[in-house]
Amino acid sequence: MWNKIYVEEDLIESPRVQSILGKLNQSPILIKNFDDIWGKSKKPYLHKRDSLNLFLAHKKGQLLKLAPDAYGTQGEPHYYFIHAYNCIYECQYCYLQGYFNSPDIVLFVNHEEIIQKMQETLDAHPEGRVWFHAGEFSDSLALTHLTGELELYHEFCQRNPRAMIELRTKSVNTKELLKLAPLSNFIVSFSLSPQKMGKTIDLKTPSTAARMKVMDELNQKGFSLAAHFDPIIYQEDFKQQYFELLKTLQDLKLTQKLLYLSLGVVRFTKDVYREVERNYPDSPIHSTPMIKSFDNKVRYHHPMRMWIMNSVKELALQAGVGAEAIYLCMEDHA
Picture 1 (cartoon, rainbow, N blue to C red):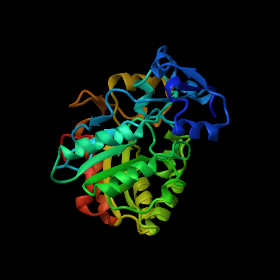
Picture 2: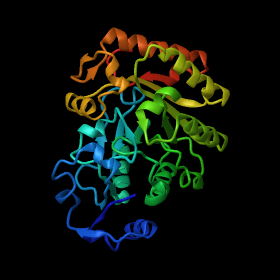
Picture 3: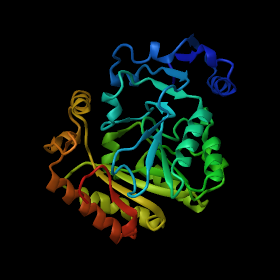
Picture 4: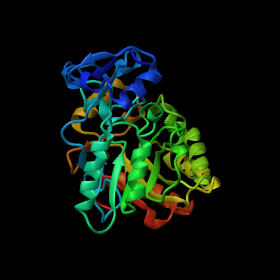
């Protein structure tokens, strides 16, 4: 899978790095700092189809970032922790194609430091729950058979019942997850597109049907689950598509088990939108006009996106999702 593997030289004796390398059976190239090479020159996003490199590195600087308003459920602080850069999947709407200069994967191995920062942040909020999200810069499950860090974050949740960890994913790679005991505050959330749309835009990902099958398996084992219908991309039959998606979730008895369901329309920064136009000129993303919105992101105009999200919300309510469990993601109006 990897064209080249780069390892920061002061990490080569690290047990975690040695474990990863032992699974890959490929000789690494030693470097001083990953960012001396990664992203120094522009590597087109779609080069990931033919040439993808892996970097094993120490995350320096900011380990946690405060999430923007409306990133999660309201009324509680939300942060995301940075365990990796970039993703093995190729979703046409992915904002990473205009965010980094390279699609190459960076796996950070200093998870103990990340967890220490999470503990400090939790302690700074002595009352109520604090949320920590994985999956902002990379899928949170797709490479866990290599990285082996889930147990550390699981133990953090065991020690801190006020800490809520969300693993945001499109992966069905649950091998390491299933070694852990279910916890109410260790949540696996799946991003889902209707099957028809997913085949077109969620490239290289497990199918929507495969993700829902895994959700069913996790639910039967007692894991806490959530879902994201984000981004919703307008098509004339979008209501029928989401009806069918929710009907399958309902048949699997999952709609009433979701701790939350977020709804959000497709949106981009200006720079990312230019990349999407360049990389996927025939995508259905471009079939509907967009405007610069309240936060300078490119979206459908406000009445249209409210109609879209409220239409899907009504379908979700009819399918058994609790009204209190549904929120609109990255929107200024409910």
